[in-house]
Image 1 (cartoon, rainbow, N blue to C red):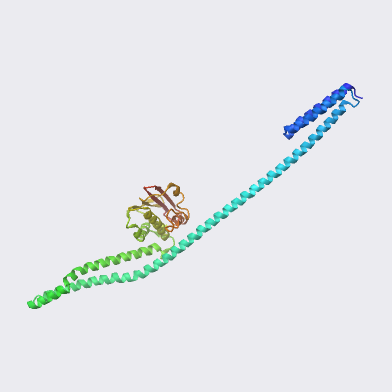
Image 2 (tube, helix red, strand yellow):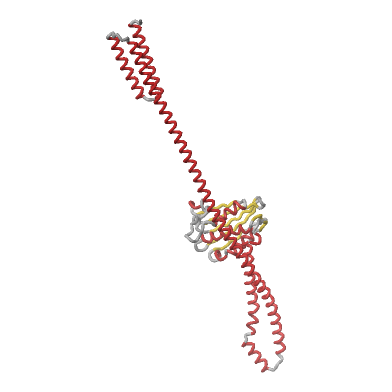
Length: 387
């Protein structure tokens, strides 16, 4: 049997082990409350065992210490299992939360993709409708131009013949007047009265001017018809080498009604090579920018067209002295359906279609610079050769 001192030493050793276990338990579970509870149990057991030693109880003190150690170990195991279960539950919850967040993020991304696809489809549909409408208008304009061109040709030809006939008739009247100058005075008086009654001299004087003015008007109509055909480009809607200046001039002719009352058009043309392009589509771009420039000018202003050749490309600048574009709108002007015009005065597709034609279909670039109250400049850069 162990002596009393041996039991005391063994009891103290066991208590130290229990104390060490309590400290480990506190570190493992990271809970000072559980550690304090374990320590309190240990102190109570220690106090009780000391009472056994002090009263020299029949129950050995080291047995009490062993019991205390077993209690502490058992409680610690329970706490560790509970803590382990809590950690597993926490990991499961975090895993579920992460999966929910991933699924939510995935659904949000898919919804965003669907929304973008819907917006792109809506824009594409609207642009197709707009282009189809422009194609229909172009076909109609080409048909009308063709129908006008034939009778205008007859008119110009007949006016030229009429001018020659008038010259011959005037020559005949001059010869007739010389022959009649030898008649008796009474006959000459009667002829002079008839000549004055029918205003023959005034007619002979006005006829050349009337024919010249009519011929000039007919030539202007023919030019408008040719510009209309050139603008519509129904007979040549594919890519080909074209003269940019010709496209600008035909567009100016078509937009003359929008420009002539409130703008002075200044041309600063450089020497440009032929450009591989669809001139009909570029004419639509020019028209949209020119009409917007005219609308931006309140009373009277200037529109300047500048063309220059650069390395492998041409640059077309269209500037106006209008009210300018606000900075907050400058980044959105090429967005479909964006417009600062009043309701019913703009669809917001003009510049969006212009951007699509220049950038996507011609591989070019379109830039804009604007200052409120000063004006706006659109610059188109197009490659000369096919890309």
